[in-house]
Image 1: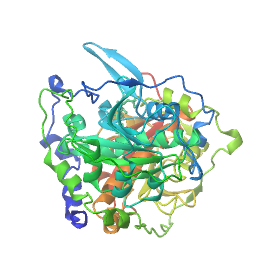
Image 2: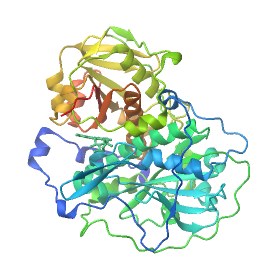
Image 3: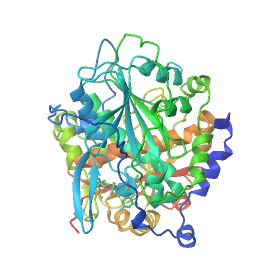
Length: 509
Ligand SMILES: Cc1cc2nc3c(=O)[nH]c(=O)nc-3n(C[C@H](O)[C@H](O)[C@H](O)COP(=O)(O)O)c2cc1C
């Protein structure tokens, strides 16, 4: 079973680290003439437009992101309008910007390089106004293209070895990653971005789903080939990465129709595509061949003993519920956009506390059982937070306390760690995600690496939303891997750098 050959994770992770030297020894220049198309388009399939006149849920964004999810019981079928709302606020085009020679379409969730390599597919039973089938979400047209007619959920249930939320889901959203669409800019590191970019999208989807009163659960344990064959994606180019069970039904699905190849034509992404085999190797090494592997996957629980405390502790002081900003999840998603510059102005400790508290209350996922368990640890560099001494901190998630690791002004170091960019130096606070990879992959196998990247993306996406809900700014960032770990050591010794989000007050350029 390749998932247990743990060298694969280290080969990929170490081989895609950024360092001061690697960026200079292996510089990469973008071939703008060959930039991939930002959308997957099946030119021979008719598109059914989705409705856009959504009802407002009225749920405050800070409540939505902190929701433990809706109880799974009875018949909870998403309507076509619900489906449209879920898709729009997670992967829909929310803004466009013209530039000389073209136009860029920005989506609901942040994405590395605005390349949007994550595609969404639906597998559903008959829903109000949507016949059973397998569909691709066309973000460009905001519509659905039917790939298969009929109820294929049984295939997904078998692929997940009968995972309970999937087994009772009237709708399953499958998220894929398309290598070239992100590798054009980021080369082999793009496989990490599958987790990050899929994660920010899922932060939105889980929050909107809870606000619509729909149960949802993130599932990563499935037999890869069965799902890829159902979607008929060419696995050399595109692979299923995660899925979300939405809604609840007690009816068992009928036996699925036979899954044959579709061989549908696609609009090419670029004139030519460059293959980066390291990503495919990482994916194959973390793939499941047997349903038993999917069943064993969700038995895995990462046991993390509480971290010892040596430094001064600061208990979070989050806003109480009645004082939360009322801005709804829809309003916040629509105004979100990565900060392109920070103002070097303070945020308050209450704002920072609210961000951390709301973003870390748990994610309903098959690899995070019991609810509230975690793969990533949060480390902070605080530059400018009223009521909190500047310095490096470790976040004790269960106790909701920030432990001071070292005091000081680390703006210069933060700018360096965030790939020598201004954003992490100018932010009020930088949140780094570090993970104990040896322990995680010993528990989950190589697939634990996928889950670690994805969890960080979801948490990062929640931080984005929590920042914009408080009229603050945020940006995901990339980083110099080993320098980040060294900066937070000895506390972070043995961990790996996974993700980074800068938070602060946005400034106009
Ligand atoms: C995981 C992640 C990493 C990112 N890294 C950087 C970065 O290193 N530098 C940067 O300027 N922006 C970075 N961004 C911001 C993206 O460029 C931005 O999300 C994208 O252009 C889409 O724009 P929007 O977020 O305003 O919708 C990152 C975003 C994400 C989600």
